[in-house]
Image (tube, rainbow, N blue to C red):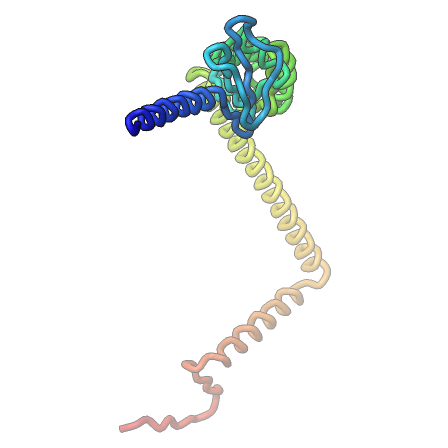
Length: 272
C-alpha cells in the first residue's frame, strides 16, 4: 500500500516538473528598450512587434527574436577623394536605431546584423558623393556645410532600410601626406612674405623719419642764420650766457666741487 502511495507521488512530481518545464519554455522576456519579432515554424515571421514585458509563446513552434531599439553609436572610417583629387580620410560617427514597426521586414530582408550589412555601404556611398563636390580647402572652411549635407543624404538613404539616424557628425578629417606638407610650406611662405613686407614698411618709415629730421635741421639752421644776419653776434653771446648759467647751476649742486672767487685770499684749514 505504501509503495503504491510513493509511486503515485513520484508520478505526480514528475508530471509537475514536466508541466513546470513546459510553462517555463512558454515564457520569454523583452527588456526595456527592446522589441521582439516572433518566428513561427508554420506561418513564418509574424507582422506583430512585441513590446516590453513577459509574454507567452508556443514551445518549439514559435521563437522570439529580440532587437535592441535604443540609439547606438557607430564610427565608420572612409577614404575618398575631393573635387581637386586630394585623398581625404574621414571618420563619420552615426547614432542609429531601427524603426520599431519595420522590425519584421528588417529581420526578413536584412537579418539581425542589419547595422553591419547596411551602414558601412551606404555611409561610404554618401560620403564619396558629397566630398566629391568640394575641394580640399572647402572641406576645411565649409566643414559645417559638408556635415549637414552628409547628414541629410545619409538620413534619407537609411530610411529606405528602416533605420533612423538620430545624429550624424564628422569626427575626423585629414588629408594625404603630400597635401599636408604643401599646406605647411604655403603657410611658411606666407609668413616669410609678411615678415618681408614688415621690413620694407619699417625701412620706409625710417626713411620718412630721416627726411623729416633732416628738414627740421635744415629749417633750424636757416632760422639761426637769419637770426645772426639780423642781430649780429648778439645771439651767440646769449647762447654763451645761457650755457654758462647752466654749467654754474650744475656745479653748484655737486658736493665735490668748491667755488673760489677770484681776487680774494681764502685760507683752507687742512687737517695736520
